[in-house]
Length: 406
Image (cartoon, rainbow, N blue to C red; front, side):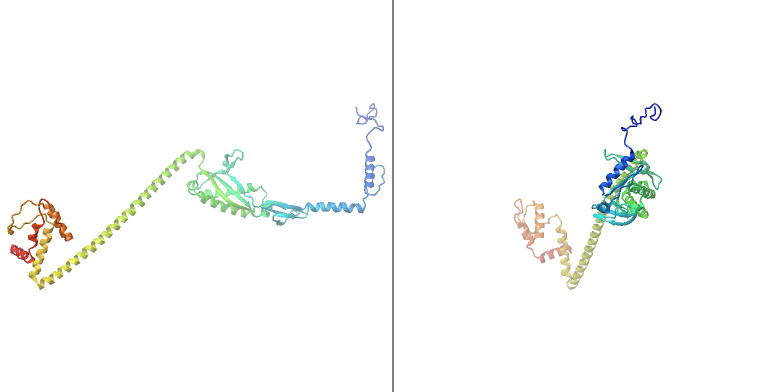
């Protein structure tokens, strides 16, 4: 039953009676504490029932304590800025200044505070995919990766953006969301705009580097427009492919396009090989024609000059010139003939078995080198057969030829 009801034997809630064995009175506890503090700080206090006065401190005891407390409060204003970081000091929440690396001090809280920002750390944001750091596996994010191209095709594209902080003041006062979310959202917007200007084939094949560069420029413009204080270091296109539903058909189209390019390259190589050869042959024929023209003209001029010279000599001595021309003509005709003419008028009875091939070769060597080979004859035949013929004078031969022609 309740402790204050009849029959409870006046027992309190702690199971004890109202005698001297109960808990101490709260007023007595407060009075004891006042006495102890008064003795500690050199003052005294008088208590009264139902309450008490606070202890009175002497000025000699308050001054050291105040100095220590103020010193500790001022000591809380020291802070260290590491290398590659910057400290943004705030006074009552407003921007004051930026401190570089080193040991720094500001007025303690709540007057001033400091925000440490790492401005040299390169951070990476993935757009369109996420990499699992534990398993190192890539998981696509279709909400970010699927984009519409200019030719109304859908492309699955992944980007990786690297950035750092160029202005910590703008980052702290103009960006409320986490930095990665801001960069990812701006990158997605920039990529959708750039991809929407180009065709699917251009984005997948030869336009990767150009799209990445245009995205970097546009992304930096967007971040600067909102004064985010973020600097884009690099934008890399990790992957660009059609959606999985049409990937097989697209691979066939890409293979056909590669075959087309291969055939074009082979045709271009053949063209580069055959055209220079044809041009070289044409140039050679042209040079040969020019050389032939020069030789024919020179020969014709030489023959004309020779004819004029012979004409002059003929005018001076017609008979001699006529004989000379006749002899030269016969020499030219018979010099290339394989027939052999033997003079039987000398009275010699030569055997009619003659090695004609050796005679022709011997005569050719005599005409070309001006020397005769005495040992080249065979079958007991020597050069003595021609000695009688060669010993005739020019006058005798001329008279004989003249008698034959008359």
